Length: 168
Figure 1: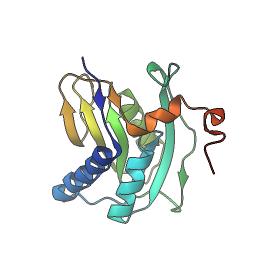
Figure 2: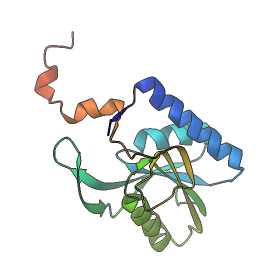
Figure 3: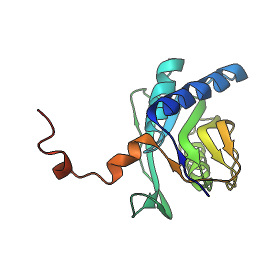
Figure 4: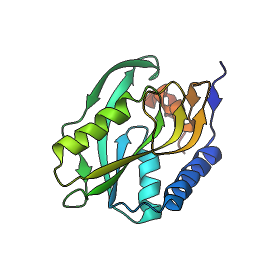
């Protein structure tokens, strides 16, 4: 199986395509919760486009070997947000759905921990066919479930010492 290599232009276009799909659905939501780290850039852009508050929740399941080894899922106890509370209808955003475990666990976490939340819909750029969870919104469904090489992954292997002397 060949990796899907995504450059910055394609990445930004995918975010815009996702925004168009959500808008075309007519569904109204009060805020966006993005899953850090992969959903940070996506959530930030969507919150700017839709003019809604952004909340950030950290979750992690990939570790080791430049973030390519899946482990147990960990969800942060608290979220970061500027609004005084979450709204009733939330768009939960990540970059991709692979197994679906992270998206499912965080969605259940939001509904269980925040009584004001009545509905959570999910949005991702890429939906891998191997996922047990089908997101409400996705730009592309990837039938062969490739590893997606996103443009920011280069930083996973970079160290500060690699950059010393480059800045002028």
